[in-house]
Image 1 (cartoon, helix red, strand yellow):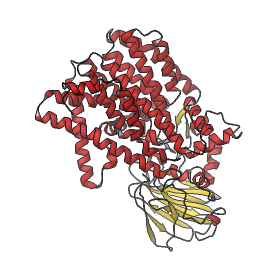
Image 2 (image 1 turned 90 degrees about the horizontal axis):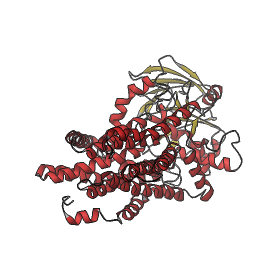
Image 3 (image 1 turned 180 degrees about the vertical axis):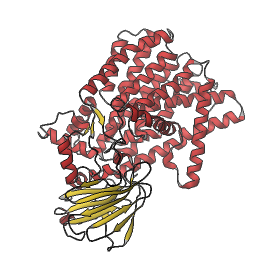
Length: 585
């Protein structure tokens, strides 16, 4: 990159057609995700939307697309017993999200191209490309009048387009709610800035309407407040006091939405993956520091999916720590320039609302708006400093965001495409005996992801295969575990670090209700007893006693083989086998 003072660079950065170029580049860069098909929650959403349009699901409202668990306690117990819910289901689990605008958008897919997932993914990709253009325009407005404003805005926008943390949001249809919320949220922030700088007529009302639309699209819309509050605190032309007063209408809208949301019973309760700060503030606050650190590293550090082996992990840790050190240094030395303080504060504030969910890259879309502006400002300041060490640091940041990040993005999109319906690793258990399975109880001994196992019946139906009479999942583990046959009807499973640690397993049980040694759960197929647990509360040794002999023809045992669910030959009594624990992505 040329120094910011270079006139050629400034002419390119200030080019009005840059927005159109960003749109095209975003489309091309995310094109590998067009073959993504239906993954995990997408399968459930697809089934609900088509049932609703066909006149079914009469007891549920049209916007119930994101009602993940919403059943009376007695129904949930019956579902646990039959295998529709996992045996470790918590006593008070309820996860219900109110996203009517995103739900309405999903009906467009179901009506316009019901059997063409690639068009659904194109829909998501176009929305994300529009967001990239809108973010660039917000950058230009925020930085207007500042030295090298156009250069920083352009660099930040390019970084945003290439951000590898966007792969899940763009490539997974169920996460489109984040893109839609961000579109409305960034538009609301842009109109707020124009109102405060240019006196835009109708700006306050339009900003409020768009802010409400962001909240009605997804809970991640709360991160909009971070952009507006940080702007009012540091950049409002009337000063911080009046700037914060100008934020009050948006804060009031968010407060009314939050109270109505909670009063109507929406949100998460009794889950270990989703923590509700309103109903369980102590649990949320205890997990907050660790989750904020994970999200910060994911947003600012090197893409972790490119890491392989111990040496690679060490190099990744050193490089990510270097980037974090540069970011902290820059935040501490930017006190005299308010617009440079805006980015780190907006970034930090935007992480708090999303910390209620288990940390993952798909939550970072809003946070990446401030993160990429922050990193671009660091690069330009380093180049302005002119020293050799500064130029090397700037080149390192540019390489991480404009070379490694796009590679990681494309790799992640391709991996998601291979998992979706029609992909080469779509999990449908094709190696199982299709004819026999329709009359059998399928026992999935181990899976790397609990949600993936739960969608197996719908995945098999999509693939034109027989669906098992019943399905039960014993454990989830991302690492190898040991299966021992201790009797004609007994199995024991051992994993020293603990089972059920991955987020989709933690989803079903609150951290406040951990499993303990001696706990017993009974289902129609087996009785499970917790024998040992880790210090963190995860079961490490479990005993399963089945109601039928393990060799009975009514039972079919299967496990994850690294790519799909495959038949599992149980060992003879007294013998053990090792089960793979490879992650699906």
